[in-house]
Each structure stands twice: as C-alpha cells, then as structure tokens.
Amino acid sequence: MMRNPSTIHRALELGINFLDTADMYGPCIDEDLIAKTIKGKRGHVLIATKFGTVYATSRQA
Image (tube, rainbow, N blue to C red; front, side, top):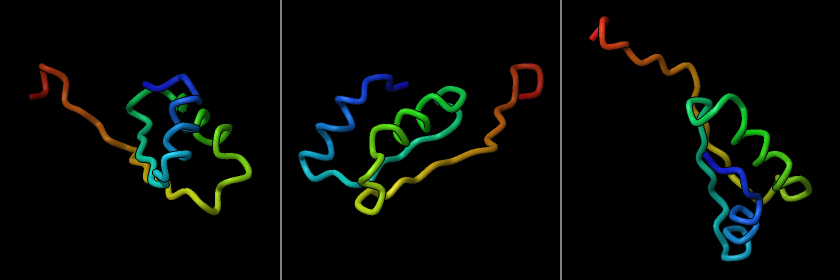
C-alpha cells in the first residue's frame, strides 16, 4: 500500500505513465492517493485497476 505521493511524482518525472492499482491493496487508499497526485495530469497517465476479487478463506479452499 502506497501512502506517499512523492513516489508517484518521481515516477512521472522519470517518464512512467502507467499506474496499476486495485481495491484489494486497501479500501480506496491507493485510488484516492493516485487521484490527488495526478490531478491536472490525467490526460498523461494511464491507470489500470482491478476490483471484485474474492479470495477463498481457508475453510472454503
């Protein structure tokens, strides 16, 4: 789970424009951080996200 926007800022400075995230990394924490960090740059960043993944508990496996 990423909580420091400087990581994203540095990635963008280095030319990285693809960010991959998922709700399983924490309840909307990564998505909210990315949204705040790339504000004003949204046309230059591609975001991939995943949702709805359900993992079996040990009793279901």
